[in-house]
Picture 1 (cartoon, rainbow, N blue to C red):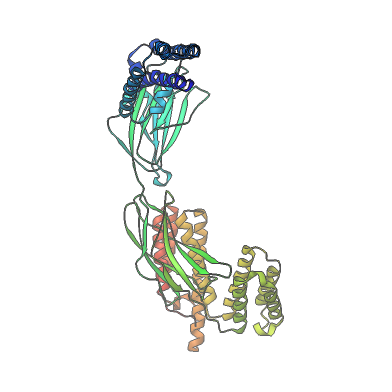
Picture 2: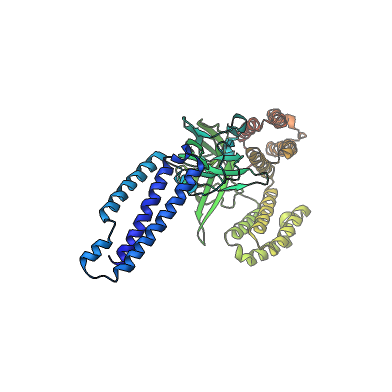
Amino acid sequence: MSKTKTLFRIVQYALVIFGAYVSASLFEVWAYLPYWLKNIALVGCLGAVYWNTRKNLRAYSRLKHYQSPAEVKLLDLQPAWRLHALSFAVLGGLILGVSYTGSGIPGRILQAMTFSLKQPPTEVLLNLTITPPSYLNQQEVLLLSEKDGPYGRYDGNDIIFLPEGSILTIEIKNTEDFSPFISLGNSLGQSYKTSKGVYLSKHILNEETTLDIRVGPYVSIRQAFEVIPDEAPRVALVAKPILTKRKSYELKYTLWDDHGVEEVFLELSRRGITGTETKIIFLPVLAAPDDQTTLTYHTNLLSHPWAGTTVRAVIKAVDGLGQISAGEPVTLLLPEESFQNPVAQTLVSIRKALLITPGRKGAQIQRLNTLTNEKAAFQYNTGIYLALRSAYWKLRSAETPEDFEEVSRYLWQTALRLEDNGSFEEQGVQALMERMVQMLAKEQDLEEFDHLAGNLQARMEVMFDAEFMLLSRRLSLNENSGRIAMPGFSSFKNLISQMRNQVSRGETGEALKTLLAFRALFEQRPVMVS
């Protein structure tokens, strides 16, 4: 018998001994026997392995002094076929034990290998809590309570169905200083002991699994969970966005998700100088869970930095788990404001150049400086002059994208003022409506909404006054301006009042619907700007 053969026999014998012990643990034999008997069995296994190791090593040492085959055969006191037969029998028992146990194998094996002179608990106090995903906005559910316990051997016969991403919280008390082994599927969960001697463990359920809790050989708690997958949202444009007579895009899109859409946006992209550039326009949701909804939304992109260029537009939706779905892409030519005033045309040209190549701002600084010194071009208007000088100094110190955006906004608003055709007032209303939509959609800063609604009403009054003055000039009229001469203001005023009341009652969804109706009515008004 060679040294290798001797070592193989020792290892094989050890595996057979412990395989039989583990097989008994998988079949929960120790749960029906006194705890001291399990400890004796464990110590007996260790002793048997030690005895067999010494016997084989002693036989190998004596073998080196003998040469004849007959003498070697006399020393081989344990025929190999018996050990092989026993190995196959134990292997079969392990396979059956694994199929019988299912999940929780690591916990059962580790508990079986635990040696303690102290009697383990036969029952424990247990709290089993399910917290649904946050995006469902549902209360947590107590599956098992210590008030209904204590629990010793519990095997849930019914599978519990839970939404994907649910959090399972386990709280175990009265463990008699025995550390519980918590398995979720075949992986051991992490638990920690609080200062009050309570074991806590949390798990996120993302797939079908079985919870297995072991505290010593007597406490066995099992519960199967079936996870309901969260399907990705579905979003699509009903038709290609169309331009309204006010040069706003009318977007019609459908939304659906089994648990509700968290966010929907229109992603615009184009090929820039350094690569593909992307900008996002957030859209309102207003879709109930598991209900397909069709929405209409108007967005004005005349002030967008990419106005006048062709972009690729894709509508996308995000659900509570962060799953993103996209509709079919469409190609859009973003509308552009047409300016007649020469100074306004120059300002828009400077603005475009800064947005395309902000790193080459030197030439634009010079152009802006020259323009501000030609006061006759804007009829020595002090307000326009101060706005241009402010933009000039801001541009000189601009370094970050936020700085250039601020300069761009100054130039755009000044150009609209110079045009003097009512577009400045209308663009102000458009920007304010967009801000209010985003505020209601995200339910943020609602305390400020009433102030913005009052500001919207005031801006609408100014816009109506400007439109009346423009109409008066076109018709060569000499009457005083007044909102009463412009029909429709009362309808807008009533909608604003309705929105304010809805927000004060906490009905943000209804307020958003009213605001969208307000915007749709705004788009239907006659175009007074040239």
